[in-house]
Image 1: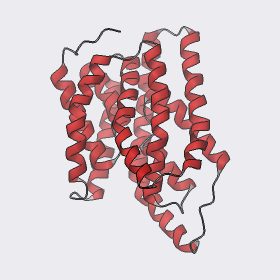
Image 2 (image 1 turned 60 degrees about the vertical axis):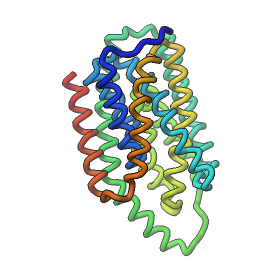
Image 3 (image 1 turned 90 degrees about the vertical axis):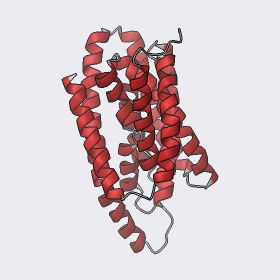
Length: 267
């Protein structure tokens, strides 16, 4: 695959910076915002936007995953159960894409529709996260320090849903995943919930991104341009974390996701 910078590379760098800033501030946004930005603002084919975004999300989340591992913020068993559902689901989606011979124009239309739904779900997940977190705190007070009760079957089923959503739209591993985990594991510390969700996203986005690469749905020049903007954005956002109220950040991100959904549909 040839390497070439997109003709609108200044816009792509700026978009990567904004996404990186939001990832640094909130921990989510790489998958939820990049794909709709590439489709609606840059005019990228939906399949190429999803494939490129998956590898972009994998790279941007890797440094955060390393820090969470080092700080023991990861429940390895939950990651394993999620992966047991998400990786086969993503693989099944790509086998279907490779063997079904779907018309790319028709498939792109369906992907835009599914992306819009996933974005709205993500916005709702971000909005209700404080409620789920408060329920988690109440459960933690009631259990008198007992260990977390693991739920393998429900966790695998959650992985199936996330794997399918991420493979088709690149959305779901972040905001939706962490809220669902909060509800499944109310006694798990917030930092371990976030760390577990981020670490699970690494193999999922890597497998899905490489599969899209194999299908020719990744633009290396576009990926490099996004990273050129996102790396400084993440660095700045990480430094600003804690200086802005959490409710304002969540409200702004939820509003941006809703606008992104509308832009994808109108595009």
